[in-house]
Image 1 (tube, rainbow, N blue to C red):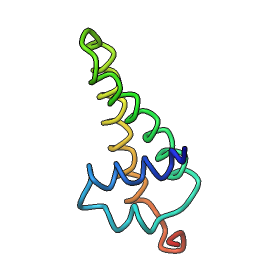
Image 2 (cartoon, rainbow, N blue to C red; image 1 turned 90 degrees about the vertical axis):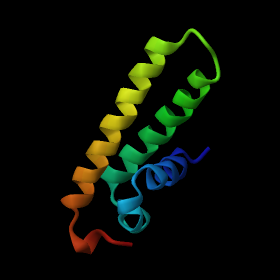
Image 3 (tube, helix red, strand yellow; image 1 turned 135 degrees about the vertical axis):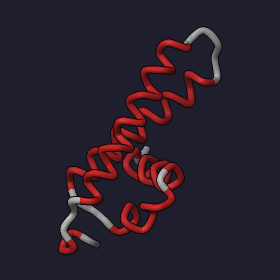
Image 4 (cartoon, rainbow, N blue to C red; image 1 turned 45 degrees about the horizontal axis):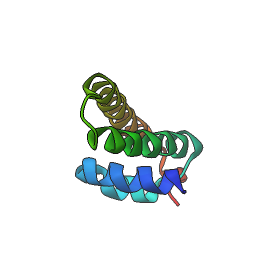
Length: 84
């Protein structure tokens, strides 16, 4: 599975104001973050399917939110030379 692609797509849905930057930016720090986000978002979806995982689900929700916040910071600090 291409977790970076999954993460990029899901992040674009969660952060519509940053869709263009997420689509255009391609540098290692952001790509690594998007890969981790893809894995975490998929795990979060798995946890939502089953009852009794509220604590773990809350942890994944927090992790995903933190990664979304970090992505916004990375986008804001990106140099125009990094655009694909």
